[in-house]
Image (cartoon, rainbow, N blue to C red; front, side, top):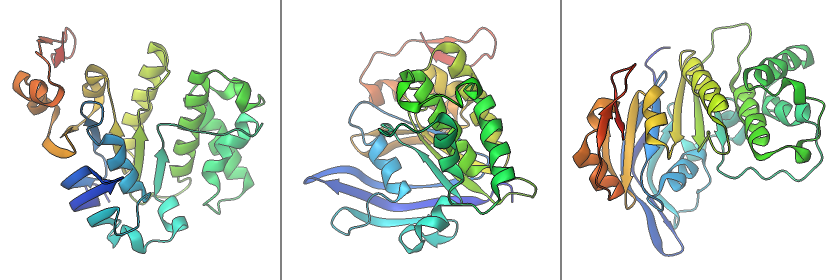
Length: 264
């Protein structure tokens, strides 16, 4: 269902190693939204995504309430989450000599859609991220940018729902443009915008503000673990907000094509 509230956070806090990394985070995310989480280094962006992914379940680590798909996150079995939530971590460690095809196919592991459908999905996602020519290569022999695109294909394959109207799903991306050249950044941006149109909510950590605001529908800015601002791109791209969030002297200019504000 369009505009379905898929994810809800209510006063979520995360404490790790005696330090409060995220404090009193509250927001809702609907299917179809592309929300970028921004902030300075150490602001709590990755920790926030990890909390939503279910990495912290112990009471001394996390407090507050995370609701996903109408249920408390902690009450969902791993497969229940995996069928509707895919996560691209900031660091993807995979030391085994899997073929690229096998790495992308890992995204289909939670599903029961059959080998024929799964193979079509793997090839489609490989094409989407320009790694189809690498399907027979060994993953560990790839460059950093190629590995990143393989993992993007994997998480997109995980959320693929062939042959029927798809339930609302959530895509969590931590620095999806990491190690990518300009051409592939634009391809990934288009793919993210495209999947959001198919009943998927996207929550992504981004460092390149100008790139993030090209295709995001919403920006959540963290400052010292707290949600400093939450709104659409136009409201975020103001000098006083950027100055506070990043501790800079922001200078803005207008994009010559889109007319959107961007950092000079």
